[in-house]
Image (cartoon, rainbow, N blue to C red; front, side, top):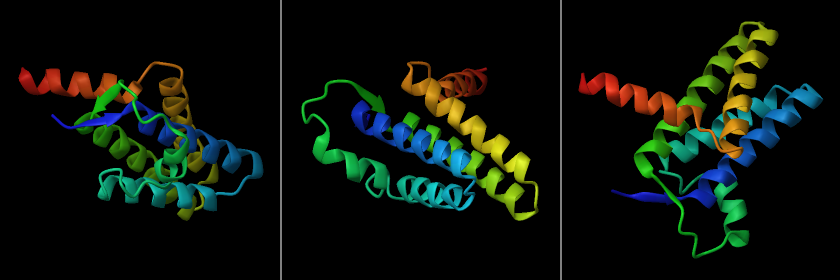
Length: 133
């Protein structure tokens, strides 16, 4: 099973939190578009094209032992893209508050993950349990 260093995962989560907080504080919904693009590129490129990871990589320890399964990382990234896509659709049809609500859900999930609780991991676990039944 392929693994992703947790430092890369945390770099992405930190980037999400920073971008969403800036979008909220400055009320710049275009930052959500940029964040969506960063996450889609990361999903397509298997993390290799994730701008947050690329920027943080020179500052991250090379011998980090903590990892996360690549499959779980992709699942979590897919959830981020889903919430950002729903947010952008809401912004596009003029539902600004709904757009920020979906973006806020992503902020809560990424913030919780940085604090040690992975919402996406819980959803993934429940999905796998459901599939087994």
